[in-house]
Amino acid sequence: MKFSVPIFDVKNLSFVVKEQTVLSSISLEIFPSEYIAIIGPNGGGKTTLVRMLLGLEKPTSGEVKIYGKKLSQFKEWYKIGYVPQRASLVDSSFPATVLDIVNMGRTSQRTLFSTLSKSDRTFVHDAMQKMDILDLADKMVGTLSGGQRQRVMIARALASNPKILILDEPNTGVDAASQKKFYALLRELNKKDGITIVFITHDIGVIADDIARLFTINQKAIICNNPKQTLSCEEMSSLYGIDAHLLHNHRHEH
Amino acid sequence: MIEMFEYDFMQRAFIAGIIIAILASISGTFVVLRRYSLMGETLAHSALLGVAVGLVAEFNPLWSAVLFALFAAWLIEYLRSAFSLYSDAVLSILLSGSLASAVIIVSLGGAFNNSLFSYLFGSILAVSSDDIMVIAVFGAISLFLLLLFSKEFYFIAYDEEVAKTSGIKVNILNFLLVSVVAIIIALSIRVVGSLLVSALMIIPTVAALRFRVGFLKTVLISLVIALLSVFSGMTLSFHFSLPSGATIVLCVLFIFILSLVINKK
Image (cartoon, rainbow over all chains, first blue to last red; front, side):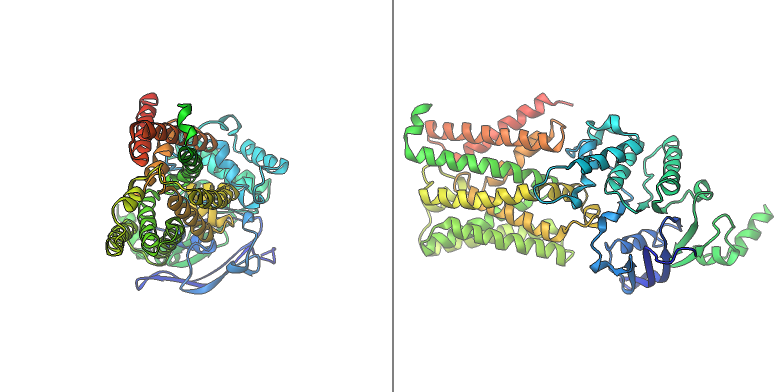
């Protein structure tokens, strides 16, 4: 790997809930400007892994370091933009305009009592421009379509001027045309702005050309450094917990 | 209408009422958005337990109301964060436990009747100069804290986890918000009464939400509704010798129904 200092350095991470192993001995690194896709079956631990990267869940064992620091010592959280799974499912009665939501992205960098500074406004404006939602600024977020909400949530994450963007299947309720635009946008953020992207998705085929590495997670992690290469039968078996040879042969018989 | 302001007790009641309307409506916005509505009810009854202790021990019950409500708020927040208990069940248990304890303490101490009745339903006649002092001082501190952290409270209300991952100290701010709400509720029971105080917190915000406008406008509409309700409620209470809390709550309910009619969608 050409980069030397990883943003995330995960070592032997395990997570056990009620004697059920969700993740087992995961070790991986994420480097600046990488575009990483995370795939795996539902319930395989993808979201749990991301939640542990962000300090939302405590691992049973193992360690996560971020910019070389333990999570508890890390202070520069504004460098991380997070768009969770349910991001586009907004409570329609919540009193927030699009601008209110994107402004939230500046909250942790504003001082007490301060109104938005000129630079805060610039970051908010730039994030909205990038997401093409400037004309929606005064619209109530509950009235937007799924695709528009998705862009608003990413604009909020971008408003903090992050170095890394973590997206957990933010496509829920989003139409196909908006998804295509969304993938193009992620590509641009990564290639043009150098933002590291960690993207949990099921649509691996669509973004295979964009990503640098692929993490497949099902309790354990398989790291694929050449995502265009098909996963081997052994890797598939390990990932989905079935015998991939049998599956392969079965398909040939038909 | 002017003549009612010739009475000292009405001047005091209006000063207290205006302060409480401001505090209840602003804090109420966060209470509703965080889905803490039932917690307001529980804190009000914990404050009543404080009142009972104050009445029996013969010191200003507002002080002990603030202390008991604060303690209850911390206990609720601790139980919610430390154990995965059914939080509405915890609130119900604390609510009935506080009310029962308050009634027993006051009965045993022989201070039942009018004193406790006025704290249950609110009384404009009963607001003393000392009460005004306590309401003004604690009210100013509460308002200061609410304004100081309003953008953080708003973010947490919208998405607690994303707020946490952006570096906001969510756990500390949750404790702070419930503490401020506890103080405001304790201060409000003098005028509105413990059985009705959470209505003044919740209903103006719910009515304001019907207008489907941004955050700042929602807070402002909620504030106007609370002020209107307190002003009209106290005026009616004075002219028709009605309990102030109940009259204020009926006024706020009337405005709420109006907001439903205006925003029929």
